Image (cartoon, rainbow, N blue to C red; front, side, top):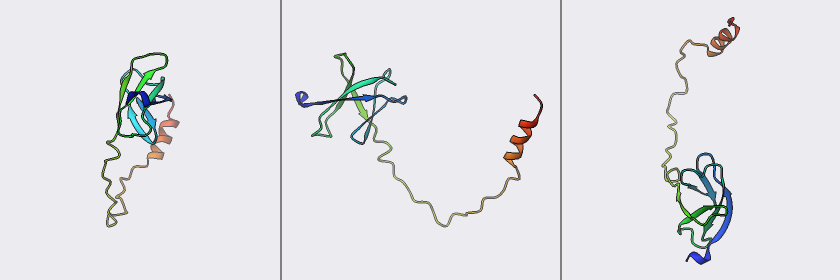
Length: 103
């Protein structure tokens, strides 16, 4: 029911994400860096979450970012070799040479 929604103030990140109750949502284009009102039902986490610019009436639906939470992680193989073959390149020496070169 839309009458029983809670309003919280959040800032949309540069990557257009909004965090709410340990969940991450994606905001529409054009909201990055803005402070917005997030409207949600605190008693039903499956209900849609909306946001609107402060002082405006138009509401925009937030999409949940569940891709990372569903990613299956595989433990590292303990039999993998620890020693990596050397390339013979000393990157620190290359940086020092570049730094010492006259411009």
